[in-house]
Image (tube, rainbow over all chains, first blue to last red):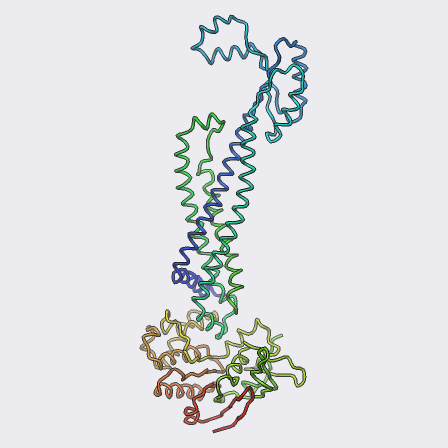
Length: 301
Length: 235
């Protein structure tokens, strides 16, 4: 095909959008909303993944040792912990060290500490890190069976909430993604159908003068492609504005998130290029496939 | 395999062709030959089979698959029984069409309506810019090249439609009721134009039910009645 013909067909596709502007605008809006939902779902999921990772990095489990346990038994417990599956590291935190640390942290309470004397009232403990946070529960169950343990303190509830939330979000997002892709296909298909109806006379004449099927269908393909690209671009800009605004609101609540072990959110700049390429690619692919399928159905040549 | 016959004198050659829609026979064992450069009128009542004949010539419908006698259709050297679907556009590029309702695109001006044909077959832009004004000029519409169809009279619109049919240098022009929507003067003008085109060597087939025009211009008359050729001769 000649370059000039391609230019002509692209112009025809753009012309279709203009002549069919009401339905094109509706398709553009619905596709943009679909892409935005897809984008925000992915971004939300990525943030949850980051939260889980940050919690995984701080996944310290404290194992308090019963008072009066001999040094030999403490060492045996340490060895057992080291050989336990899914334990990444083991650190012995003596009661003296714990007492010194607490004194350093609570400088205002010197008077209280003076009453306590030099002997630490705190228990000895082991601090261990878990390799795979998803398997934290079975690891803790195994550890709790060991001798000379007073108490095991782990962020298990929060971890369970986060991992549960992540699984739920993944499932919900997948369902939403599929539904939105289907909706986008239907929308593009209807837009193409409207354009085909609008250009019925032209298609009829083109058939009589010997235009090939491909030549007749190409303007509809470009129409869909342009709508998809425009929706992708709009989604990117809206995500940029929306996500930055959301982050500025959430950043005022840093203390709450820090208390939850969440150090921050993924800044837009870090995934800006991926978001741009992703939106453009998804918009283009969905609209192109939708248009090709619907021209096959509606353009009888 | 390209379904071309190497040597032809006949523009249209149909033998033992029947076309049936469901239970209704639109054409029944029709045989017809129109020579290259001939001018022929095809007349007949509504439902006689005229439209089916046109559809058959552009491979919009297929002849019934009958073994004995086997049907045969060639148009401008294309064997339509053997022609592959993907080669149908190539056949149609050798035929120019003129319709009763002109079938002009109201959002395009005269130039674009005519150029549309060449654009549809991927012709070079340089050729389009040269050829289109030339054909529009031949139709006497040079001064109206930038006007839109609704700014033209019925006769002028039909001349644009004829320019569109001619622009690709077709060997055959099929005019389907070309004077149906025109006033008496425009009817005569249109028929004269088609005769002039025929005089320059293009085969012209005019499908009409206007017997007055047929009598006035004379020539070959093919009368279709209930799917069969009831009369084929000169008047």
